[in-house]
Length: 213
Image (cartoon, rainbow, N blue to C red; front, side):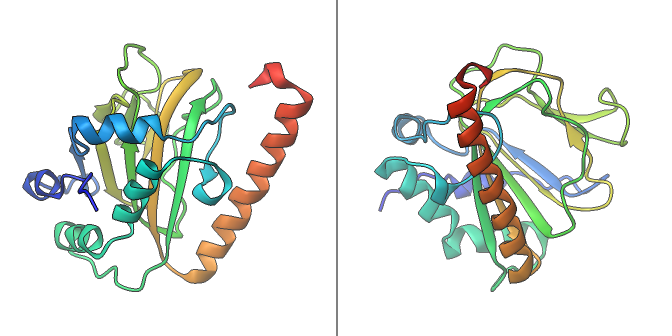
């Protein structure tokens, strides 16, 4: 199986510890792998997050998903964040589009231990849609770091009560894979139920109002 994820680049990137632990890795997925994964990326016509078992994709995308679930990936994060993630349940969701209502400031739910975002847009010129790590809950300009959703970029952070993040409004294609380690299997089941219900509703809405996507 090819190695799509550049774990050596991840290990070489220092962890920023304040105000909450995070790191950003450009080129986490190499150019050849990016082309293959993007060619096999799920076709998503509505905004929102979809569980990977609710979308269709090709074999290169499956290889990427398998690497996210690998021991090597988990061990790299354990070493970087100083955590024991063995036995922790995981959830992977995928986005294809963004609408102007997305991007509100939040910290992620308490059920999440670590959030991993891998961006897949080939380029990004818009001022909106660039995820900002923030120092506060009510100011999008109180910026720690800003991350354009350019293909192959990884952003990872440890969820905490002050892990604020959000972005300026954007409507259009914005490809991102989200991977989380969760605190318990019960929380994983709740998260999957919520995502599956949301995905089903969005499909019905798309059939009824195709021009609203």
